[in-house]
Image (cartoon, rainbow over all chains, first blue to last red; front, side, top):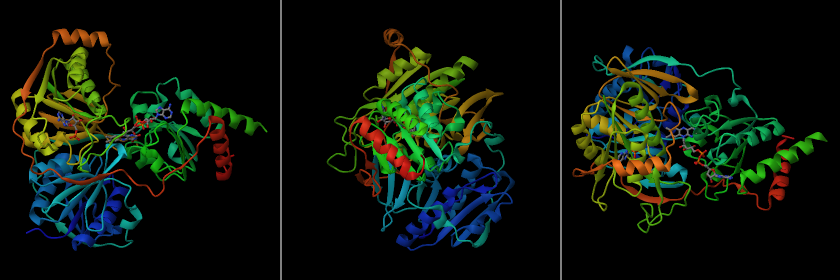
Length: 322
Length: 254
Ligand SMILES: Cc1cc2nc3c(=O)[nH]c(=O)nc-3n(C[C@H](O)[C@H](O)[C@H](O)COP(=O)(O)OP(=O)(O)OC[C@H]3O[C@@H](n4cnc5c(N)ncnc54)[C@H](O)[C@@H]3O)c2cc1C
Ligand SMILES: Nc1ncnc2c1ncn2[C@@H]1O[C@H](COP(=O)(O)O)[C@@H](O)[C@H]1O
């Protein structure tokens, strides 16, 4: 029989718990208040029990196995399939990430359970509220009346709310047989070093697809120089090879928290906001009044960046000379 | 090796999106559809594999405005076979239903490798890639930005935040969710696409029956109401420049 507990599949990478795990614990608490169950963290790993120490969970289910030391989709799915089917919680939260999304859809098909993705928060009566269409549309769903799998995106809760400063009870759960895995980790490849670390810079001028081509990046670089900052970019700019991966801001790039984040021609998709949403002052320059970036920016303008950026650079140079 | 790339047409986010009368879906009257950007990368990755290891490459998408363009563009880039899935335009579809139906078509093609975009922005019940993988009994790895064939298996570059890459070895047949190709999607001229239209044929196949169980139902759609919406700076370029300078001073950046 289904119970009312909310499970959170903890995400960790190379021995470190991801912030999104704590954020999910906070989300799970909100949902559990609506359903009336407990918040239960599900930790898969190898010698990883200590990761549970700070989790704001009522208890932790810990599965220990050498094949779970690092994430691989096959091993995670097999382990979680048995665990979820056996316990029938009200909902299971996964991160909308490189780890969580690989697992959630497969498990939804394997266990014939509904899946709701990109959930940002829960309403007071436990309805998932999700962000779609690059942040331009919100969608609210009912929580289906069977065990439901959800993937969670940042924005609704804070990691600190999911930290308790104490160790919850840990219950060990037997791992299934994890032989003959079809996916194995060969090695990690470190990001290239040597470039500036944008996560440490106080002033960032970031360019998006609105910059149109590689040559135009020069105007952003000039503005950055005039302001005493560095340039960064959204994913399409990096994917086009116009800027190095080390300058990427967002879900798959760096998280930055500068004093000033100037966004030029960036729409403000959730995956981008994930990396810069906590900047002190965000200033957005975007010709589309409805661009989601204006929902996170402190100041905004719809003046064309090709008019504004050179004018701004010139003015800054004048002022700084005096 | 048989490589299949899937694609989906999604609303162009540059356009304004309207919610329809039901309040649970987008108004499709003025919706402009474009290829999901990640599928452009999946097609590019498939072509790179074909060039490197002589794979046969099939591209599959559902019937929608713009689907033919995508298919002909793919053939101009190097695809061998084009398939368009023909369904009832009024049918209720969710990703679970779509994945089950697509899996039936895919099975016949006996693919060694299926590439999809890792996600599309306009739906709520998971991604076709991992769903199809499970229905076909294949392993799945997503967030991938590079695929190589080695000794009958593939080695993929899976992305983690901050530029960290995990090289994973995956048994074939497999499904891989592409985040980006190893190089930016190539460009083909309109002329080449026109040429392709004359010689290439699109196979139209009926979409197998849809079973919509397991999908999520949307109760209400709305535009985000932000409490912290930006203070908009209006005026001419000069006025906005002057105001921004003041703001920089207030923050202490000048
Ligand atoms: C799994 C996954 C991970 C991802 N990770 C990241 C990530 O780490 N970082 C990231 O950035 N994205 C990431 N993305 C991509 C993300 O979803 C968006 O596609 C991307 O952020 C959009 O980039 P953009 O805002 O530059 O481009 P667009 O969304 O195309 O926006 C361009 C903007 O420029 C404006 N514009 C155009 N011309 C002008 C002008 N002349 N003046 C002013 N404004 C103009 C337009 O109005 C538009 O809003 C990820 C996606 C997925 C699926
Ligand atoms: N109707 C469809 N036809 C073919 N491929 C699809 C379809 N829907 C989704 N896909 C593939 O699955 C990817 C992820 O989309 P989604 O499952 O909608 O998140 C897309 O980028 C496509 O590669």
